[in-house]
Length: 194
Image 1 (cartoon, rainbow, N blue to C red):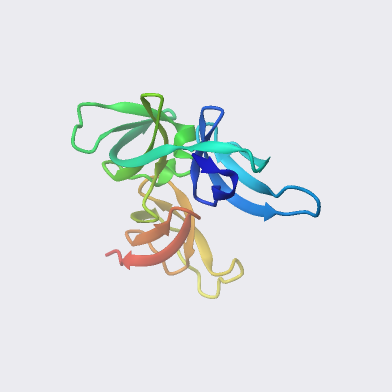
Image 2 (cartoon, rainbow, N blue to C red):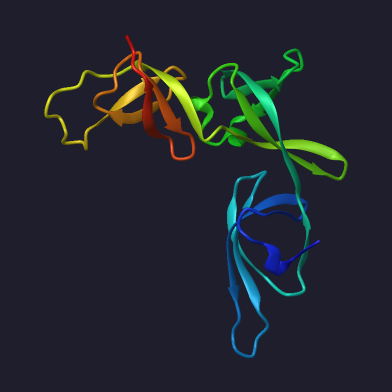
């Protein structure tokens, strides 16, 4: 069991049978009152974020959340299909809400981490984490114009997965670039196209 003062950022716990992730934690001690913990927590099933205050008497069960590798197969009309890493015949689909906003950065047959919540004898996938940095090929890039730095020296390029991101002006079709999946930003050019 977790005490209220153990709800530090990054900690998983169960509240009302739902897994939550602690995003922010502030310990408050006011005169003549008992100390409290002010938190910002995210429901890992619904994705909703809320602010909640906990008292000294509050105790919580730590959420049993593990990661397991799964293979992304394809996307069809908002349904994302996966399979266990080593068993392509056992296909299953996940809703777009579990992928959050990174569905268009997943490349077919790439390995991602499924967040698995175990509770009361059941296991449920509650989210998908992509690697922090991925490499994708640029399939469309407008030509660069010399002196075109009014937009901060960036242009919109289309990646092999269909995602559109901002990249520097020197990026061309055929280049392979690294993307940070947490902020969806260009990191570097990994390989120059032909």
